[in-house]
Image (cartoon, rainbow, N blue to C red; front, side):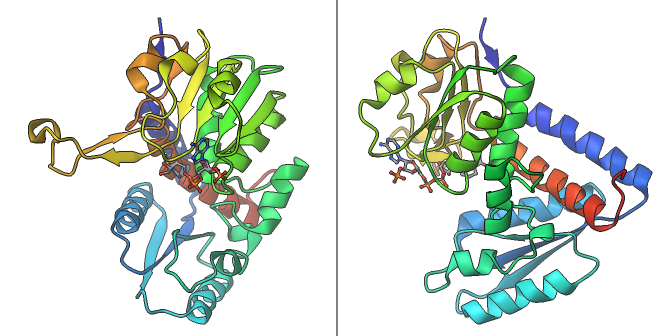
Length: 293
Ligand code: NDP
C-alpha cells in the first residue's frame, strides 16, 4: 500500500512543537522578510510567511520595497536588519526584480541570520558537513524522508534539478544520510533510465508531470517539489478559474508503484514555511546563547 505523505499534517506537528518550545523559552524570535517589487506569487508567499510566523508567537515584519528600488537600497535594508538586535532571521524573497544582483543581496545577509540558508557561507558549511542554516525547502524534503523513507544508507537517490535553492542542497543532505546521489539536470542523458534505478526520487524541475509513472522503480520513495499551475480547458474542473496545481511527477501513475509519495499541493509546500520558522528558532537560540554548551 502506497503512503501518501501528508506534508500539511507533518508541518503542523512541527510548528506545534516549535510554538511550545518558544513559549517554554519565553523569548520572541524575530523574522524579517524582504519583498521587492510586485510579483504576485511572491506577495502571497510573503503574506503567508508573515501570518504563520505571527500565529506562532514570532515578531514578524515584512519590509516591502517598490520594484524601482536600487540594489544599494535593498542591501542597505539588509544591513540595517543585520544590525537590528530584535531580528534573528532575514529572508529576501526571490526572485528579485531585473537589475538587482540576487547573489550580492543574499551575501549581504549576516550568515547567523540567514534563515533561507542561501549565503555562500551557509552553502559552503553544508557542503563541508558543518552545522549550518539549511535552505528551507531542502530541509523540508529531508525531514519528510527521515520520517517516511526508513534507513537511507546506501540507497540510490536521484535528484532532478540542480538549482542552488533546491537541487544542490537536497543532494548534500542526501549525501549526509549516506545515499549514493545522482544529481540530474536538463543535460542528463536518458533521464528515465537514471530515475528507474533510484530508491529515492526528488523532483525539483518546474515542469508539470514530467516524471512518468513508468520511470519509478517499484517501492521507491518519491518527493515532488515542483509547483506548476496548469490551465485546464474544462472550466468546471479549473476550480477558481486559474487552473490547478500539479507537481513535476505524474502523481496517480507514480503513486501506483511508489512505496511513498508526496502530493502537490499538500506535500513539500507546507514544509517550507515550517522549516523557515524552525531555522529562525535555530538562529535565535544560537544568537541568544540558548543552546546548551
Ligand atoms: P530552477 O528553474 O532554478 O531549476 C530547475 C532545474 O531543473 C534546473 O537545474 C534545470 O536544469 C532542471 N531541468 C529543467 N528542465 C529539465 C529537464 N527536461 N530534465 C531534467 N532537468 C531539467 O527551479 P527551482 O529549483 O527553483 O524550483 C524547481 C521547482 O520547485 C519549481 O516548480 C518551483 O516552483 C518548485 N519549488 C517549490 C518550493 C516549495 O516550497 N514546494 C520551493 C522552491 C521551489 P539546468 O540546470 O540544466 O537548466
